[in-house]
Image (cartoon, rainbow, N blue to C red; front, side, top):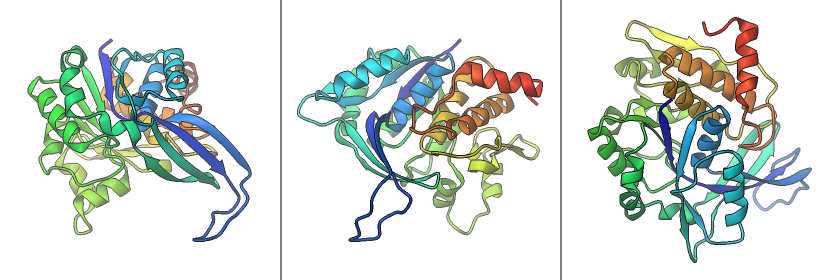
Length: 300
């Protein structure tokens, strides 16, 4: 099995569930409040580790009251935290999440995630290069991500880039990654309104893998657009579904599965993740995915 490095954000999530969402200046009563572990980097690392991946997390947290909670949690999830950057005088990243009718609205305060910068990356480079598959998102400084992707591309590493939360990217960055995994809204932002989504997917066959939520995943196999369906489930909390897909996709790649099998493995994991509350608490175990595959007779 190949070694996975996730380079990205680590947060504490503060979640409020309510029957209504407040308008500007309005106060409403919520139904439930809970804290959970999040950050797209940590989410993807936990998703991969739960599914049996050999995962190291590269990121930053504050030397604050949240530190031990996070470290103990990540150890319990069997994520390698040897390379985490613990920063003085900066708070651990935080996300404030409103849950309503199975959907979510999120405000992120980066905090220590801004210290996952070029200085930290260069200090960690020797350890990073010991890994085989790299997973990125965009909740840490973009200049760090782009510089590290260039280095990894030169070293012929397998690179997965999940462009979320969406921001303007260098035009040649997609060409340097092995797999680019936007959702449909992120891809529309990247390509603009004048280009059909499926035309752009066809420009990057076996590389651009676009998630469409409940409508599954699309990619071009070199001959045609292929749709891999999602499993139909009752969504309780969609927070972390995309991260679960990416983590699961990375694990399947590390095990040498075909691209179609990697995507199907990811869609099963992502579908299961929305049936429970919390970005990481809802992430499935390997046994849950295996049960579905056995019931369906394996991959298509």
